[in-house]
Length: 159
Image 1 (cartoon, rainbow, N blue to C red):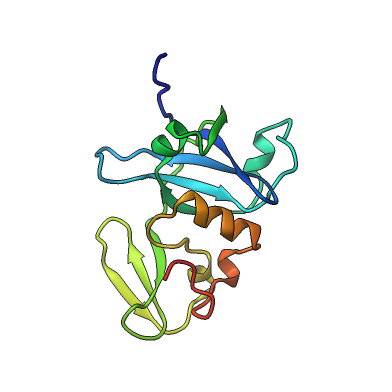
Image 2 (cartoon, one colour):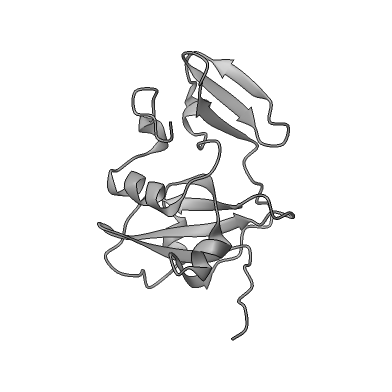
């Protein structure tokens, strides 16, 4: 059987206890020591949407996730492809809890430079978590209604 090639825009289904979640591959790294970047859509579905474009209209967050491995292990199932917009750019900044004190760290994806901030601005609240997640964590977050806007130092997601 031929190996299916991963392409930008591929949409995958991830089964959860509360419905089906959808993710989209938005970046494929050029080297093997990094996972793919995905959009994780918050909304869970009881059945596959007739029009996959309707998924893209919903809110989402970004994270690194091993798409190729998860597909090979049948943790996720490819259901289609929606090409990324021509002007699509991966996020440059992410946020992380400050492991060395209070507040947050804003992380530059390209330089890995971290800036400490005590309070998050409205723009910071929209930044996705720094790093990667596995399928178990993604399912748990979606099943519990987690959203970027509600993420604070009291409800840490990965520490």
